[in-house]
Image (cartoon, rainbow, N blue to C red; front, side, top):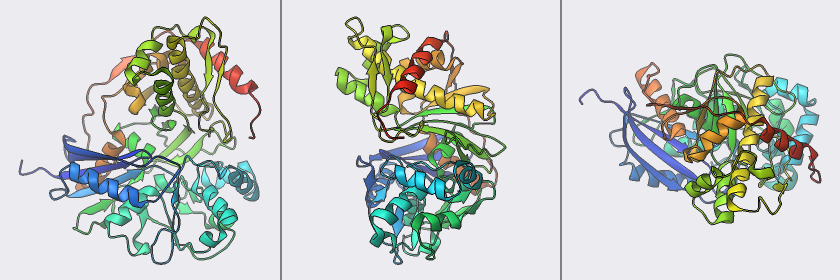
Length: 469
């Protein structure tokens, strides 16, 4: 035990914060903690800090920890004044009020092809740059006060340092690549796009970019803080994804992403060209509606998550003709921020709990199957699909997913993979080399493909109108 070196990993997500304390060499989980965040699409960041403090306390504190790293939800805009004070509540990734601002910025930056060349992605409402343009247009007095801009993980790493000097704010390539004013290919900020977003050229302090295996600062107690990462990049690190792996994550949002040795630039806007947490790239497709569709199903049916899955397995593929377009919170991919959910094909035969449960799960997964197809269209290799996230724990999800994706599904053991990825990053910086941890036995599931389900979904997706695009 004398050689044990202990590290901590943090996942500050939309709904909660998780802290894992692990052995740096073996990855053995020693203890963990968790605390909830308030719901909503904007939040005072102080709630993140208080939740992190509670989760750390629940995890037994950091007295024996030799390094820590924070991963967090991407895109959220934390605007700071010259004293480091938060100017207004942080606007989160899932806030769609900046949809029009994104369209304007894309056009002003030279169009979709040019903006994707500059920053790897076509801007949508979720990107930080879009939120800054919204701020400039709707709260110009707040925009004029900005001296620094942080993302959720940057802000928390800074708070661990004391949260006073804005020059100490740091980030990594993966999270910076979700701002819309950072080029993951060159690893440099595009301050021209930042100035365009804010409609002024005031000097703004942006987080320093820390290499993935380095430390960016220390806590007030002297614990080194690693670079941190965006949540999806940390998850890829946590499951030890390699080129050819496509990870489908079913959290609050649904994401399909792959580790790639080469950058992507998708002018259609479907695939975001992010960086990963190791120096490579992370082409990613995000849908706004994933686990919350299952939450809605529990409310509609008056059942638990497990019971919803059990009901769904009693219904045949296609739910006897019932199809769901799951745009409950608008949608990011396709870019339909004003959309709402649609049930189609309902009749007396399928007006029952089992078919409704099946249609809701299939609708959620069909959106992610489209996401995987978008990656394939860009030339991303798909050797296997790794299913993670809270909703993946539902016993019906992997089986239905394999049928809809038409590919085998690999399900790793249940774990907090975003926090695990952050912990691995802390271990990498501490040890000087990336540790290889045993993530445990995976389950492989393969069922008969059901292309008719995707056909019906796409027909509904392509022929439902009435929203602004």
